[in-house]
Image 1 (cartoon, rainbow, N blue to C red):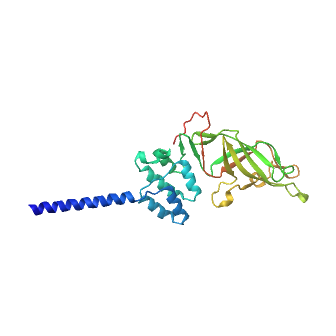
Image 2: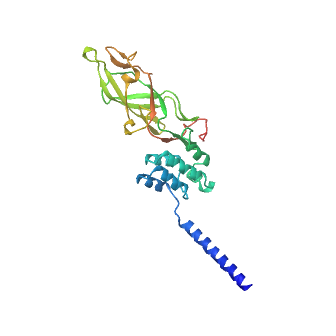
Image 3: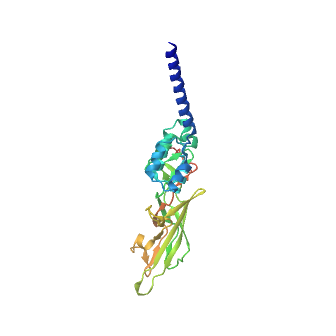
Length: 272
C-alpha cells in the first residue's frame, strides 16, 4: 500500500516537472514580429521558409494597412504577408489584428488582393490602380519645352470599392520630358510627359504611365504621346503633336497608399 502510494506520488511529481518545463519553454519563446519577417527577407530567406516559420511560431504581427505597405516596401512578398494575416486572424480577438486598428474581417479582406481593403479611417489604394485623367489645357509639341509643367484633372471620382478617396476634378501634375517641333522633310514632332502625382486632399498619390509592375523602370515612366494617341486627329499643323484640353489619359497608381475617405462621402469606409 505504501509502495503504491509512493509510486503514484513520484508519477504526479514527474508530471508536474514536465508541465512546468513546457510552460517555461513557452514563456521564453519570443513571438514573431514584423521586424523578424523583414530581417529574414533582407537576409535572403526563401518566402516558403518564412511562411513555414510563421506557421510554426507564436505571432505578434502588426497587420494594419500602413504596416502592410511598409512590409511591401521592405521587399516582403505577398505570400508571406498573407501568411502573417492568416496567423493574426487565427488569434483571439483581444490579441489579434484589432489591437492594431484593423478587425479580423479587414485582415481577411487584405489577404485577397482583388478585394477592397478599408477601415473606419480610410482605404488602401493599390499599386497599378487605373486613374482616369484629362488634360486641363491644350498641349502642343511646337510650343512646349522640356521641363514644362503639365496639368491634368481627375475625370471621375477615384474609389476603393464604394468609398471615394479622390474627388472628380482633383488636380494631377506631370512634366514634359521630351518636346520636339516638326522638322524638315516631313519629320513629325515628338512630345513625351512624365507623370508625377495626383493630389488627393492632403496626400500626393504617385503616378506612372504604364500598368506593368516588374522592375524599377516603371516608376515615373514617361508617356510617349505620339505613340499613345497615334497620328489621327492629334498630329496637326505641320505634323506637330497637338493635344486639346479634355483629352483622356489613363495613369496608374505607382505605389500602395493609404487614403482617408473624402469628407462628406456618404459611404462608410469598411471592408466589403
